[in-house]
Length: 367
Image (tube, rainbow, N blue to C red; front, top):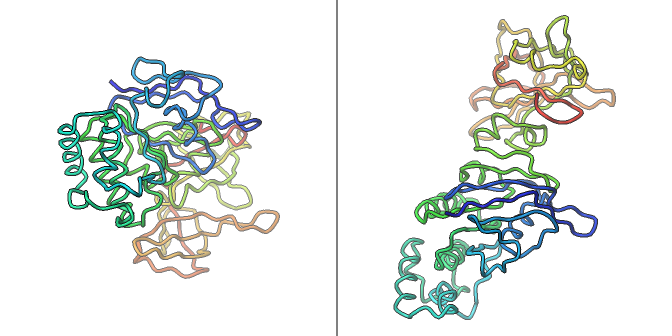
Protein backbone atom coordinates (compact mmCIF):
# COMPACT_ATOMS: atom_id res chain seq x y z
CA UNK A 1 0.00 0.00 0.00
CA UNK A 2 1.37 3.44 -0.91
CA UNK A 3 -0.97 6.08 0.45
CA UNK A 4 0.74 9.39 1.15
CA UNK A 5 -0.37 11.60 4.02
CA UNK A 6 0.71 15.16 4.72
CA UNK A 7 -0.33 16.42 8.14
CA UNK A 8 -0.10 20.15 8.86
CA UNK A 9 3.03 20.54 6.73
CA UNK A 10 4.80 23.91 6.96
CA UNK A 11 8.02 24.94 5.25
CA UNK A 12 9.64 28.38 5.56
CA UNK A 13 12.52 29.96 3.70
CA UNK A 14 13.44 32.82 6.05
CA UNK A 15 10.38 35.13 5.90
CA UNK A 16 8.68 33.26 3.03
CA UNK A 17 6.16 30.54 3.89
CA UNK A 18 6.44 28.11 0.97
CA UNK A 19 4.06 25.51 2.47
CA UNK A 20 1.43 26.84 4.85
CA UNK A 21 -0.12 24.16 7.08
CA UNK A 22 -0.96 21.78 4.21
CA UNK A 23 -2.79 18.52 4.93
CA UNK A 24 -3.82 16.03 2.25
CA UNK A 25 -4.00 12.31 1.66
CA UNK A 26 -3.60 10.31 -1.54
CA UNK A 27 -5.22 6.96 -2.13
CA UNK A 28 -3.31 3.84 -3.09
CA UNK A 29 -2.56 3.76 -6.85
CA UNK A 30 -4.02 7.24 -7.29
CA UNK A 31 -2.74 9.76 -9.84
CA UNK A 32 -2.81 13.06 -7.91
CA UNK A 33 -1.89 16.27 -9.72
CA UNK A 34 -0.69 19.30 -7.75
CA UNK A 35 -1.69 22.38 -9.73
CA UNK A 36 -1.05 26.07 -9.26
CA UNK A 37 0.83 29.13 -10.52
CA UNK A 38 4.58 29.53 -10.24
CA UNK A 39 5.69 30.04 -6.65
CA UNK A 40 2.57 28.52 -5.08
CA UNK A 41 4.51 25.82 -3.15
CA UNK A 42 3.68 22.74 -5.21
CA UNK A 43 7.29 21.81 -6.06
CA UNK A 44 8.44 22.46 -2.48
CA UNK A 45 5.68 20.12 -1.28
CA UNK A 46 6.81 17.45 -3.75
CA UNK A 47 10.45 17.84 -2.71
CA UNK A 48 9.42 17.55 0.94
CA UNK A 49 7.70 14.23 0.22
CA UNK A 50 10.87 13.08 -1.53
CA UNK A 51 13.11 14.15 1.36
CA UNK A 52 14.92 16.85 -0.62
CA UNK A 53 13.43 19.58 1.59
CA UNK A 54 12.88 19.40 5.34
CA UNK A 55 9.70 21.09 6.65
CA UNK A 56 9.88 22.82 10.00
CA UNK A 57 6.45 21.54 11.05
CA UNK A 58 4.14 18.65 10.26
CA UNK A 59 4.44 14.99 9.34
CA UNK A 60 4.81 12.98 6.13
CA UNK A 61 3.63 9.38 5.95
CA UNK A 62 4.22 6.95 3.09
CA UNK A 63 2.01 3.99 3.81
CA UNK A 64 1.93 3.70 7.59
CA UNK A 65 5.55 4.85 8.01
CA UNK A 66 6.42 8.37 9.14
CA UNK A 67 9.31 9.32 6.86
CA UNK A 68 10.29 12.79 8.15
CA UNK A 69 13.70 11.58 9.29
CA UNK A 70 14.42 9.22 6.39
CA UNK A 71 16.79 10.02 3.55
CA UNK A 72 15.39 10.10 -0.02
CA UNK A 73 17.02 6.73 -0.72
CA UNK A 74 15.07 5.11 2.12
CA UNK A 75 11.60 6.38 1.16
CA UNK A 76 11.01 3.97 -1.77
CA UNK A 77 10.13 6.78 -4.14
CA UNK A 78 11.23 7.67 -7.66
CA UNK A 79 11.58 11.32 -8.69
CA UNK A 80 11.30 12.47 -12.32
CA UNK A 81 12.65 16.00 -12.61
CA UNK A 82 11.77 18.80 -15.01
CA UNK A 83 15.25 18.42 -16.51
CA UNK A 84 16.04 14.87 -17.53
CA UNK A 85 19.49 14.72 -15.86
CA UNK A 86 20.68 11.81 -18.00
CA UNK A 87 24.32 10.77 -17.87
CA UNK A 88 25.69 12.01 -21.22
CA UNK A 89 28.54 9.46 -21.38
CA UNK A 90 26.25 6.45 -20.86
CA UNK A 91 23.98 4.74 -23.38
CA UNK A 92 20.25 4.61 -22.92
CA UNK A 93 20.62 1.04 -21.64
CA UNK A 94 23.19 2.07 -19.03
CA UNK A 95 21.19 5.16 -17.98
CA UNK A 96 18.14 3.01 -17.29
CA UNK A 97 20.17 0.26 -15.64
CA UNK A 98 22.21 2.62 -13.45
CA UNK A 99 20.07 2.34 -10.25
CA UNK A 100 20.17 -1.46 -10.41
CA UNK A 101 23.92 -1.57 -11.05
CA UNK A 102 24.47 0.81 -8.14
CA UNK A 103 22.48 -1.61 -5.97
CA UNK A 104 24.62 -4.52 -7.30
CA UNK A 105 21.66 -6.40 -8.80
CA UNK A 106 22.64 -9.53 -10.75
CA UNK A 107 23.46 -8.86 -14.42
CA UNK A 108 20.78 -11.25 -15.70
CA UNK A 109 18.11 -9.49 -13.61
CA UNK A 110 19.30 -6.10 -14.86
CA UNK A 111 19.01 -7.22 -18.49
CA UNK A 112 15.55 -8.65 -17.93
CA UNK A 113 14.23 -5.55 -16.19
CA UNK A 114 15.76 -3.08 -18.66
CA UNK A 115 14.24 -5.07 -21.53
CA UNK A 116 10.84 -5.06 -19.83
CA UNK A 117 10.94 -1.30 -19.15
CA UNK A 118 12.16 -0.53 -22.66
CA UNK A 119 9.27 -2.50 -24.17
CA UNK A 120 6.77 -0.74 -21.94
CA UNK A 121 8.17 2.66 -22.97
CA UNK A 122 8.65 1.61 -26.61
CA UNK A 123 12.33 2.55 -26.70
CA UNK A 124 13.90 -0.86 -27.42
CA UNK A 125 15.37 0.50 -30.66
CA UNK A 126 17.44 3.25 -28.98
CA UNK A 127 19.06 1.34 -26.11
CA UNK A 128 22.55 1.67 -27.63
CA UNK A 129 22.34 5.43 -28.26
CA UNK A 130 23.82 8.25 -26.18
CA UNK A 131 21.53 11.06 -24.88
CA UNK A 132 22.98 13.56 -27.37
CA UNK A 133 21.34 11.57 -30.19
CA UNK A 134 17.88 11.50 -28.63
CA UNK A 135 14.85 13.70 -29.18
CA UNK A 136 13.13 15.44 -26.28
CA UNK A 137 10.42 12.79 -26.12
CA UNK A 138 12.97 9.98 -26.15
CA UNK A 139 14.98 11.60 -23.35
CA UNK A 140 11.77 11.95 -21.34
CA UNK A 141 11.03 8.24 -21.75
CA UNK A 142 14.56 7.32 -20.70
CA UNK A 143 14.28 9.47 -17.56
CA UNK A 144 10.97 7.78 -16.71
CA UNK A 145 12.49 4.36 -17.42
CA UNK A 146 15.36 5.03 -15.03
CA UNK A 147 12.79 5.80 -12.33
CA UNK A 148 10.59 2.81 -13.16
CA UNK A 149 13.41 0.27 -13.09
CA UNK A 150 13.55 0.26 -9.28
CA UNK A 151 9.81 -0.52 -9.06
CA UNK A 152 9.15 2.13 -6.39
CA UNK A 153 5.87 2.38 -4.52
CA UNK A 154 5.53 6.11 -5.29
CA UNK A 155 6.32 8.19 -8.39
CA UNK A 156 6.94 11.91 -7.90
CA UNK A 157 7.04 14.00 -11.10
CA UNK A 158 7.96 17.67 -11.23
CA UNK A 159 6.71 19.21 -14.50
CA UNK A 160 8.38 16.44 -16.53
CA UNK A 161 6.88 17.56 -19.85
CA UNK A 162 7.51 21.30 -19.69
CA UNK A 163 10.41 21.03 -22.17
CA UNK A 164 8.42 19.15 -24.83
CA UNK A 165 6.58 20.67 -27.78
CA UNK A 166 2.77 20.84 -27.68
CA UNK A 167 2.10 17.78 -29.88
CA UNK A 168 4.51 15.58 -27.96
CA UNK A 169 3.04 16.70 -24.65
CA UNK A 170 -0.38 15.49 -25.75
CA UNK A 171 1.08 12.08 -26.65
CA UNK A 172 3.08 11.82 -23.41
CA UNK A 173 0.06 12.69 -21.24
CA UNK A 174 -1.76 9.54 -22.32
CA UNK A 175 1.47 7.51 -22.14
CA UNK A 176 2.19 8.55 -18.56
CA UNK A 177 -1.34 7.82 -17.43
CA UNK A 178 -1.24 4.41 -19.14
CA UNK A 179 2.10 3.57 -17.51
CA UNK A 180 0.92 4.58 -14.04
CA UNK A 181 -2.15 2.38 -14.35
CA UNK A 182 -0.09 -0.51 -15.75
CA UNK A 183 2.45 -0.29 -12.92
CA UNK A 184 -0.21 0.13 -10.23
CA UNK A 185 1.78 2.75 -8.31
CA UNK A 186 0.77 5.95 -6.55
CA UNK A 187 1.83 9.06 -8.48
CA UNK A 188 2.01 12.75 -7.57
CA UNK A 189 2.50 15.01 -10.56
CA UNK A 190 3.29 18.74 -10.34
CA UNK A 191 2.28 21.12 -13.12
CA UNK A 192 1.05 24.66 -13.78
CA UNK A 193 -0.79 23.45 -16.90
CA UNK A 194 -4.46 22.90 -16.11
CA UNK A 195 -5.01 20.91 -19.34
CA UNK A 196 -2.47 18.36 -18.10
CA UNK A 197 -4.17 18.32 -14.72
CA UNK A 198 -7.70 17.89 -16.09
CA UNK A 199 -6.74 15.17 -18.57
CA UNK A 200 -4.46 13.06 -16.33
CA UNK A 201 -5.57 13.38 -12.71
CA UNK A 202 -7.79 11.17 -10.62
CA UNK A 203 -7.86 14.17 -8.27
CA UNK A 204 -6.38 17.66 -8.44
CA UNK A 205 -4.88 19.54 -5.48
CA UNK A 206 -4.87 23.28 -6.25
CA UNK A 207 -2.38 25.45 -4.37
CA UNK A 208 -1.80 29.18 -4.02
CA UNK A 209 0.70 31.02 -1.82
CA UNK A 210 1.59 27.80 -0.01
CA UNK A 211 -2.01 26.96 0.85
CA UNK A 212 -4.15 24.09 -0.38
CA UNK A 213 -7.17 25.85 -1.86
CA UNK A 214 -9.18 22.80 -2.98
CA UNK A 215 -8.74 19.10 -3.69
CA UNK A 216 -11.15 16.99 -5.71
CA UNK A 217 -11.83 15.29 -9.02
CA UNK A 218 -11.27 17.34 -12.19
CA UNK A 219 -15.04 17.67 -12.59
CA UNK A 220 -15.49 18.87 -9.00
CA UNK A 221 -12.80 21.56 -9.00
CA UNK A 222 -14.04 22.85 -12.36
CA UNK A 223 -17.79 22.77 -11.72
CA UNK A 224 -17.91 23.34 -7.94
CA UNK A 225 -15.05 25.71 -7.08
CA UNK A 226 -14.91 26.37 -3.36
CA UNK A 227 -13.40 29.86 -3.60
CA UNK A 228 -12.63 32.73 -5.95
CA UNK A 229 -9.06 31.59 -6.57
CA UNK A 230 -10.07 28.17 -7.90
CA UNK A 231 -12.96 29.68 -9.89
CA UNK A 232 -10.63 32.16 -11.57
CA UNK A 233 -7.69 29.78 -12.03
CA UNK A 234 -9.51 26.85 -13.62
CA UNK A 235 -10.76 27.15 -17.17
CA UNK A 236 -9.58 28.90 -20.33
CA UNK A 237 -11.09 31.41 -20.53
CA UNK A 238 -11.66 31.46 -16.81
CA UNK A 239 -14.97 31.91 -15.03
CA UNK A 240 -16.64 35.31 -15.34
CA UNK A 241 -16.38 36.92 -11.88
CA UNK A 242 -18.22 40.21 -11.40
CA UNK A 243 -18.90 42.14 -8.16
CA UNK A 244 -22.59 42.39 -7.32
CA UNK A 245 -25.16 42.90 -4.57
CA UNK A 246 -28.39 41.11 -3.75
CA UNK A 247 -31.66 43.03 -4.07
CA UNK A 248 -33.88 41.22 -1.57
CA UNK A 249 -37.04 43.05 -2.67
CA UNK A 250 -36.69 41.93 -6.29
CA UNK A 251 -34.85 38.66 -5.49
CA UNK A 252 -32.16 39.63 -7.98
CA UNK A 253 -28.41 40.02 -8.23
CA UNK A 254 -27.48 43.47 -9.50
CA UNK A 255 -24.05 43.61 -11.15
CA UNK A 256 -22.05 46.65 -10.11
CA UNK A 257 -21.54 49.45 -12.68
CA UNK A 258 -24.11 47.90 -15.03
CA UNK A 259 -27.87 47.90 -15.58
CA UNK A 260 -27.90 44.10 -15.44
CA UNK A 261 -30.15 42.33 -12.93
CA UNK A 262 -30.13 38.54 -12.71
CA UNK A 263 -33.21 36.81 -11.33
CA UNK A 264 -32.24 34.08 -8.86
CA UNK A 265 -33.88 30.78 -8.02
CA UNK A 266 -34.48 29.69 -4.43
CA UNK A 267 -31.43 27.41 -4.44
CA UNK A 268 -29.24 30.55 -4.62
CA UNK A 269 -31.40 32.92 -2.57
CA UNK A 270 -31.33 30.59 0.43
CA UNK A 271 -27.50 30.83 0.55
CA UNK A 272 -27.29 34.61 0.83
CA UNK A 273 -27.01 35.96 4.37
CA UNK A 274 -28.26 39.53 4.94
CA UNK A 275 -24.95 40.75 6.38
CA UNK A 276 -23.03 39.97 3.15
CA UNK A 277 -25.77 40.75 0.62
CA UNK A 278 -24.05 43.88 -0.68
CA UNK A 279 -20.57 42.31 -0.87
CA UNK A 280 -20.94 39.42 -3.30
CA UNK A 281 -19.29 38.17 -6.48
CA UNK A 282 -21.31 36.63 -9.29
CA UNK A 283 -19.65 33.82 -11.27
CA UNK A 284 -20.53 31.82 -14.37
CA UNK A 285 -18.40 29.94 -16.87
CA UNK A 286 -18.28 31.19 -20.49
CA UNK A 287 -19.87 28.00 -21.84
CA UNK A 288 -22.83 28.36 -19.46
CA UNK A 289 -24.07 31.57 -21.10
CA UNK A 290 -26.07 31.24 -24.32
CA UNK A 291 -26.26 34.01 -26.86
CA UNK A 292 -28.98 34.80 -29.40
CA UNK A 293 -29.06 37.39 -32.18
CA UNK A 294 -32.88 37.51 -32.08
CA UNK A 295 -35.09 38.67 -29.18
CA UNK A 296 -35.87 36.01 -26.59
CA UNK A 297 -37.80 35.85 -23.33
CA UNK A 298 -34.55 36.83 -21.58
CA UNK A 299 -34.42 40.40 -20.36
CA UNK A 300 -30.62 40.43 -20.62
CA UNK A 301 -29.82 42.53 -23.66
CA UNK A 302 -26.31 43.80 -24.40
CA UNK A 303 -23.85 44.61 -27.16
CA UNK A 304 -20.90 42.69 -28.57
CA UNK A 305 -17.57 44.29 -27.66
CA UNK A 306 -15.05 41.91 -29.25
CA UNK A 307 -14.94 38.52 -30.97
CA UNK A 308 -11.90 36.21 -30.70
CA UNK A 309 -12.09 33.33 -33.22
CA UNK A 310 -10.20 30.27 -31.96
CA UNK A 311 -11.12 27.84 -34.73
CA UNK A 312 -13.02 25.34 -32.59
CA UNK A 313 -14.97 28.11 -30.86
CA UNK A 314 -15.39 31.86 -30.67
CA UNK A 315 -14.84 33.82 -27.47
CA UNK A 316 -17.24 36.76 -27.43
CA UNK A 317 -16.80 39.69 -25.04
CA UNK A 318 -20.15 41.26 -24.17
CA UNK A 319 -20.14 44.85 -22.93
CA UNK A 320 -22.27 45.25 -19.79
CA UNK A 321 -21.12 48.68 -18.61
CA UNK A 322 -18.17 50.77 -17.38
CA UNK A 323 -16.76 51.23 -13.90
CA UNK A 324 -15.97 54.66 -12.36
CA UNK A 325 -12.46 54.75 -13.89
CA UNK A 326 -13.75 53.95 -17.36
CA UNK A 327 -12.80 50.27 -17.51
CA UNK A 328 -15.17 48.02 -19.45
CA UNK A 329 -17.31 45.55 -17.51
CA UNK A 330 -17.31 42.48 -19.77
CA UNK A 331 -18.94 39.06 -19.81
CA UNK A 332 -17.04 36.42 -21.79
CA UNK A 333 -19.01 33.77 -23.66
CA UNK A 334 -17.85 30.70 -25.57
CA UNK A 335 -19.93 30.24 -28.74
CA UNK A 336 -20.00 27.92 -31.75
CA UNK A 337 -17.50 29.02 -34.44
CA UNK A 338 -20.24 29.36 -37.06
CA UNK A 339 -21.99 32.11 -35.07
CA UNK A 340 -20.85 35.28 -36.82
CA UNK A 341 -21.04 38.50 -34.79
CA UNK A 342 -19.86 42.07 -35.22
CA UNK A 343 -18.70 44.56 -32.58
CA UNK A 344 -21.62 46.72 -31.52
CA UNK A 345 -24.23 44.14 -32.48
CA UNK A 346 -27.16 43.76 -30.07
CA UNK A 347 -27.58 40.26 -28.59
CA UNK A 348 -29.74 38.54 -25.96
CA UNK A 349 -28.25 36.40 -23.18
CA UNK A 350 -29.52 33.36 -21.34
CA UNK A 351 -27.69 32.15 -18.21
CA UNK A 352 -27.95 28.57 -17.02
CA UNK A 353 -29.34 29.08 -13.51
CA UNK A 354 -28.01 25.79 -12.13
CA UNK A 355 -24.46 26.87 -13.04
CA UNK A 356 -24.48 30.29 -11.39
CA UNK A 357 -21.94 30.66 -8.57
CA UNK A 358 -22.03 33.24 -5.78
CA UNK A 359 -19.03 34.10 -3.61
CA UNK A 360 -18.49 36.16 -0.47
CA UNK A 361 -16.31 39.04 -1.65
CA UNK A 362 -14.64 39.50 1.75
CA UNK A 363 -13.57 35.89 2.34
CA UNK A 364 -13.48 34.67 -1.26
CA UNK A 365 -15.41 31.55 -0.24
CA UNK A 366 -18.29 30.13 -2.27
CA UNK A 367 -21.73 30.37 -0.71
